[in-house]
Length: 80
Image (cartoon, rainbow, N blue to C red; front, side):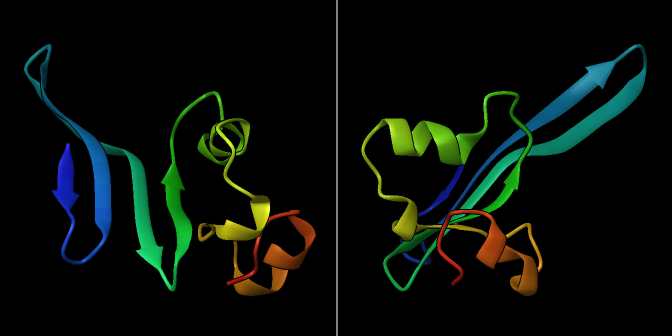
């Protein structure tokens, strides 16, 4: 886990070795910008934004940053 509470950047990464091959990757990357949760990368199967909504976070407070700005208007979440 990588937490930067000063800059409001949060990541979950995996790192290690498998069959003599280096493994590294980002599973989740979230930023907090202008009081909105920006999901920059979601490598989960369940969908992080939908889980946040289930926990009571309004869709208007969640931006799917991995979608290009023009497409965000069609997601049902905040545009930025």
